[in-house]
Length: 430
Image 1 (spheres, rainbow, N blue to C red):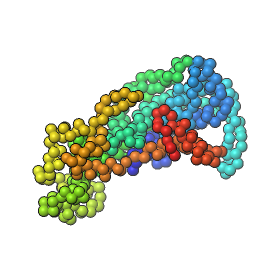
Image 2: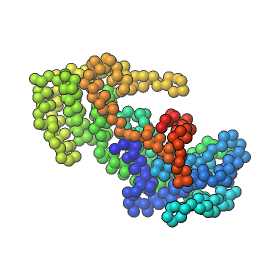
Image 3: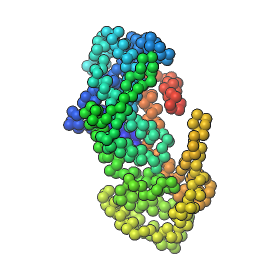
Image 4: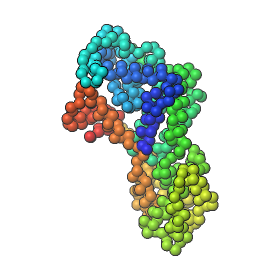
C-alpha cells in the first residue's frame, strides 16, 4: 500500500472525515470535524464569491499589505489541502472578519434535490462565519495536521529513500504517543499590517478535548496500519543494504528482524545465482535449492515463527562469502562508503555533504566489491512505496473542475497546473 495513501486514511479517520470512523469516536471529535468543515466552506466561498474576495483584498490594502493573499480552496478528499486552507484562513482572519461584516448577503449557486437544476439563492454571511470556538479548534488542529503534513511532504516523490520511509512514520507515531508531555506552538493571526503568522505556546492540558482525542486516534491508526506490522520487505532489505544504518535498528522487534534476515538471505542467494557467482558444489547453493527455501507459509504468525527457526543459529555463509566479509569489516566498509557522499546544494550554495545510496551503489568500485548487494539494490530501489507525486498533480488538477466548469481543454489544464505548482514545488507537466 502507498504510504502516503495509508497515512491520509489515518489522518482522515482522526479528524472525522474517514468513511470507516466509528460512531463512538465521531461523537468525541464532532466539534473538531465541524470546525474543519467550516474552514473549508469559508475558503470556498471567498474563492467563488466576488464580493467577499474584493472586500478581503480591500481590507488588506487598507492595512498596508502590498501583496494581497487569497484563501486556499482544498479538494474534499485531501486533508493536507484542508490544513493549508485553515492556515491561510488564520493568516487572513482579521480581513475575513472585515469582509463578512461588510457584506450582509451573498449569492450562492445551489442544486435542487435531484442535483440537476442550478439556481442562485441569497444567503446571510453569518451562516459561514466561524465562531470563536471554531477559530480556536482550527488553530489547535495544527498540533495534529502540521506534523502529519510534514511527514507527507517527506514521503512524497523521491525526497526520502525507501530505507528511511518507515522511520518517518515511526517518528510521527512517537510524536503522537508522547504528545501529553509536550508543549505546542499554536498559530494565531498576524499583527496589523503584516502577513506573518504568530505563535503562542500551549501545553497538552490546555488543548480542546476533541483535539486531544484526535491525536490519540491518529496514534492508534498509525499503530494499527504501520507500527504493528513493521516495515514491508523491500524497506527491510533497503535498511540492510544501507552501509550507514546500524543493523538491527532498536525500534524493530525481534520477530521483525528475523523475518528481515530470512528475506534478505533468500534474495541474496537468488542474486548470486542470477549473477553466476554461486558455486553449485557449495553448501549454501545446495541449501538454496532445497525445499526448505520455498516452503509455503500460510499465515503471518507462521511466517514469524518460520523466520525465527531459520535464524536460531548463525548463518555460516559469512565465513565463505568474500562480499559479506568485506561488508562486516568496519574498516573496509568505511573506506567504501566515502564514494556515496555528494554535495547538497541549496540556493546555489553547498550546504553539506550528504550520503546517497543511489550514488553509492552506482559507483564502479562498489559494484566491483559488492556485486550481489548492488544487484539486489537495483531490484529493490525500483519499487517506490508511495505515489505522492502523482497524487499531488491530481489534487492540483481537481481544483480546476467544478459542477459548473467541467469542460477544460488539456492546454488550459497544464497551464493551470504550472501556475498552481508555486515556488515550493517543481513545475508539473501533465
